[in-house]
Amino acid sequence: MADASSRPFELPAPGSAGDLLLDRATDYFERADDIRASLRTIAEEAGTSHRMLQYHFVSRERLLGAVMLRLRERQIAAGDDYRMTASTRAEYLTKSWASYLHPGNRVYLDLMIALTNPMSDAVEDESLMLVLRQSWNSSLVELGIAEGLTPLQAEREARVLRAALRGLHHDLHVSRDVEGVNAAVSVLVEWVTPER
Image 1 (cartoon, rainbow, N blue to C red):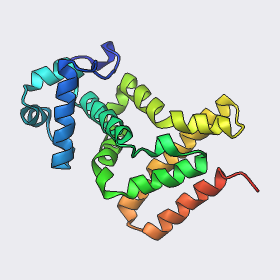
Image 2: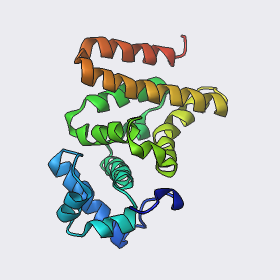
Image 3: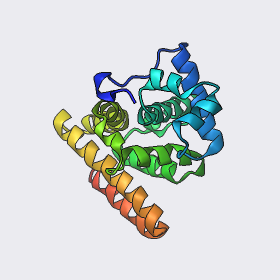
Image 4: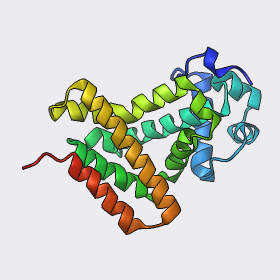
């Protein structure tokens, strides 16, 4: 496989061949509802070769990251993205958790877990991780600044909040304790809710 670190991660240009392949790969994941497919299987389902996917995306991990971002673009286009409608960090966390629990978002969440798993080689792709972190944290940072935090403090708290949400999603997956995990989410919401 090509050396991913030698090329910065980025989405293909709109309308390009890579953009078309990304749409087809995203369609496949939405249909299959399973992210364990090999690069060869994804290529076959997208009507191309695995070498062509490698040419456009370098690695399977980068393709999965691109699919995640494309799924988010589709949510935004459908007017169904909590990042665009939350006016406070508390509202962001509440809507984010509801999105985590929505069955229609399973593929997105499975991709997130796979790509942020510390045992995964994807974590070593710093360029991919940088783009995904910026995508996940930007709204929380902006909301934190609007609530009076300094940019540095807003960035630090955004990282804590995103990590906590991912951890709670893992906890829910393992424990199946919906009530207990929901109560933990409410602690996060209270933490970022200004005293009245």
